[in-house]
Image 1 (cartoon, rainbow, N blue to C red):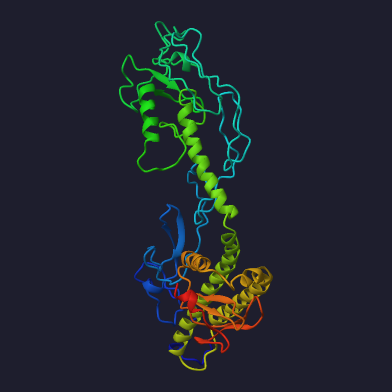
Image 2: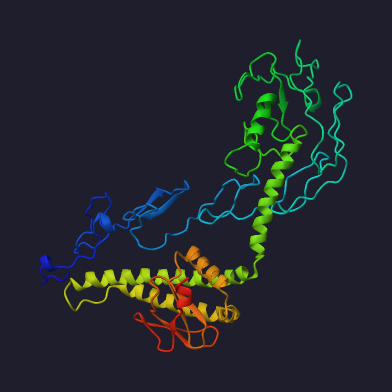
Length: 437
């Protein structure tokens, strides 16, 4: 400051050093009133419902039932990592719905042939004869006479192995004779961990799973898989090892159970695929139309957010002395607001040709089609607002409060639609046939 100026009336532009009630430093300039906990914008990390850490402003109350911002939240940038129905890990971002699995299928039949299809597609069916049969020295001599793809027609064999092992004196195999591709030594492998109960008994019989090599008690695993199939929640998911959670994709003893589980999973994928491909042609057309509205909705939300921020700055400015220059923050938000409007106009022009065909089909819709369109709008956009028609009878919808706030051209005929300040353009009218559905 100049030597002749009074220090008491000097304007300090440094950041304020005061500590506000939330424990953060004031974000305003030294000569301005300190901000409070309710408008503190210091970034903090909070744990979201999904378990990931996200950065939000200190004044933001992280409560799904109450949003102090009055607008949409910023999407998470963490990977999902949830288990899909097929057993693979979802690799999409956390804020998206888990899509059908696109990884390579890892199912393998008893012949060792691995399915070469994508996980979300139906598996290639093996038409060779099933090879599940008892060993030559087994007294049961059970043998499946079906094809590999069919349900096996033989029971499980519970004949004990009792092979004398070389790992120690009096060490015998504690597994099943016809399931022992690798013998189980209860002593050397220290099989005393209690998982199903009574694993430490002398007469306990075990089975070694093929993929993860975990050794589990036979009758406990039998009951575990039986309960898995009889679940009361009707949840469809892949079968996993109860000890290490590795997916069980191949097992002679449990081949019938795996076929039932895989069939249920394939049915789920088939249903999802039919929905994606749009077996209902109208739903498929509507999907493209909805994507355009979804993008415009986000642009409108962003525009409203900037408008509110500008209003807050102007309110604060009006409390100060007149004649001050417009703060740089307001200039910044004004430029961003204009850029949002330009982007929205460019988006509308870019999609005009694509939506012309959909708009033309809006005339002459049946009652069922109108109900489907309105239901889709309400589900996807938290309400469908109000419906209107241009002079030529082309339908359009206005979200949020449902009242017109801007004028644009009809994508089909080019006439002006919408309005301004909640007043509809003269040659437009309410589409009561939609609003009254």
